[in-house]
Image (cartoon, rainbow, N blue to C red; front, side, top):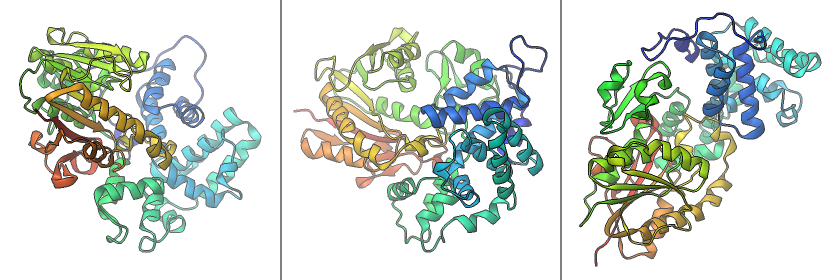
Length: 487
C-alpha cells in the first residue's frame, strides 16, 4: 500500500478530529490545495534550504488544509524528496538538455509529477493533468506545455521499466546502481557502506541496500514520556504503543502529536528512540564520587536535554543545557521547563568558549553538529544538500567540542560523544583522534549500558554503540562513552 493510501485510510486519533470542511474566511483556496502546498514546500527546500518537516505543518495550518488533502500534500512532499535522485535520472533521459538548465520553478513540478506517476496509485491522466494545471498557475501557460510534454514521456513506462534504463549495472557499479535505484548521492552510498563494513565487491552491498531502503520508508512518530511528569501508559490513552527499547518511548501510529495533552503541557515530546537511549546510557554509567552536576553542551533544540533534566531531577542532580544560538536556547529552555525539582537550566553559550570552569561536571553530553546522515528518513532533503566537503568542514569543530567536553568533566566523570551520523570521519576518527592525545581517558563499552538493544556494537572491540534504521527502526545515532581517569 502506498504512503498516500495509508494516510488516507487512517482513523483520527483520540487526540483530535480532522477538519471536516465548511467555509473559511480569507482568500479562496486554490483548485488543488494539496499539490500547491507540496509545490511551495519543495520550492522553499530548493530555494532557501528550508526543512520540509518544519515548513509543511506550518503551511497546512495556515491554509486550513486537513484530512485527505493534508495526507496527499504530505505524501507528495516527502515522497518527492525521498525519491528525487531516481526521478532526476529518469527526467534527464526525457529532457533534451541538462536537468540543471531546467528553470528552478519548473523542476519541482516535474519531480512531483514523476512521483505521482511512478510511486502512487494516482491514475496517470490525473497525475499529468493536475500537474499541468498547477504549472499554469505557478509558471505560466508556455512552461506548462513543457511540463506536459516531459511528464507524458515519463508516463510511457512504470518505475520497474525505467530503472534498468537509467541505473548502472549492479555487478559493474554497485554504488552507482544503489544510488539511482534508492535515490541517494553516490558519495553517501559509499560512506554508509564503509560504516557498515561492506566493500563494493561484497555481492552488491546487501546490508547497505537494506539501510537505503529503510531511509525511504516513512518513519514512526516516536514520543518520549518525560520521567516524573508522565508515563507511557498516559500516551497509550491516545492510541500510542509502547516502544521496543526505551522505557520512556511510545509509537504514535496516527494522529497529530500536538493534539496530545501531555505533549502540549511539555510532559511528553516527540523524540526518536535512539536519541532517548543515548541520553539514558550516559545516566547509567557509574561515576566515582558525587553525581550532582550534569552538562548538555550542544543542547538545541532540546530533546535530549528535556529527558536528561527529568532524569537528573529524580536523582537530585542538576542539568545545565547550553546552546550557542539564542533562538534554539529558547527551545531548550522550554524543553527543560518544569522538570522534576526544577532540575534543568538553559543557557546561551558557545561550547568552543566554555562559560563554565573546567572539571566541574560529573556527566557531560556533547551531541555535536554533524552532517545528519543518520536522520535521512525524517529529513530526506539533507541527502541532497550535503557533500563530502561538509564532513571535512565539520571535523575541526567536532574535535574541539569533544576536547572541551572532556575538559569540563571531573576525574571519575563520564562524557557521551553523540552524532546523528554514522559517517566514520564524524565518529571513530574524532574519538580516536582525541584518545590518541590523552592518556587520562578510558573508552568504555557503550553497548554494555544499553543491554536491552541488540546488535549495537561497533568500532574497536565493539566499544561504540551504533543504531541503524534497518536494524533498530531508529535514526542512525552513534554513541561513544569516555571516562576521565582518576589519579
